[in-house]
Length: 164
Image (tube, rainbow, N blue to C red; front, side, top):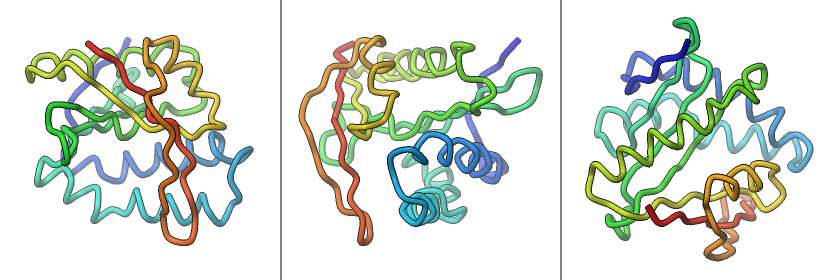
């Protein structure tokens, strides 16, 4: 039994904990520890998530299993093109992977994107991340490749897009 709800400022630490537990498993095989720690600190700083939620610049959805949060997604219209929505984050606790929660969250983001009158959803995925095949199964196609600087590191991503 699962539920999905929009996250509030009170959920910031929960989001951070899920990210921390997920990132080390996901990125450990493809990034060095220093880069993972740096990126977690940059992307998941409590004040940054709190501000995104408070200003509604990014919507976070929390998926709970038996009232325990186990996964989240973060999305928003793209700043440079509000006709395209972007799935910024999608992470499920490793113990829940394979239960379909990632698919459920993507479908919820798709539903909300369409309800907002938009027809394109895109995301970034590291070129070496196994999630790339999951996104392809969900109908996302590689639109282009992008290398994005973050501090002294680089995110080597595919930008994947799905027309809704």
